[in-house]
Length: 203
Image: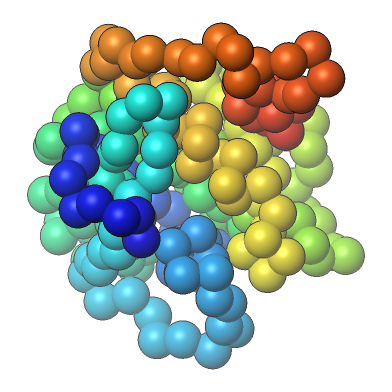
């Protein structure tokens, strides 16, 4: 938590995908740095918050964890309107969850447009030794959608900070938020946030 409660902007971010792909684990790891293999399935929708710095701005993220079960989808879809960013999440060990992403994207685009919201594809559970969906397939789907793609692991806390940093940048860019940068802090021997994100993002 930052020293001041004052924030410059608030961003509403959703995690969308089939049940069991790890949306809740991603949320808990990113906001609380916690991981549990045993947690209750999300009923309807839940959310957590995290405050971050974006250059000279303080931004509060409201991150919504949506249920993937069919019977809860009408509830989740009520939150699509007004979303600033959406993570589409699938489980690399479960091909069906990957095949369903196109359906999820169609639903999202019936409420929003890619010009207005940040969209990022997450291939979760890459810590597993068993994979049913490889990197090339995930990357090709992201290219088809025209969005960025990250491979992540909530268990190992792999690439989550980078994915969320990229999302914040996507949203800020679409909202045309003006920021001030301290050029004196950037040296030739230090990677900028953008360079780190681009290195981790499998675009």
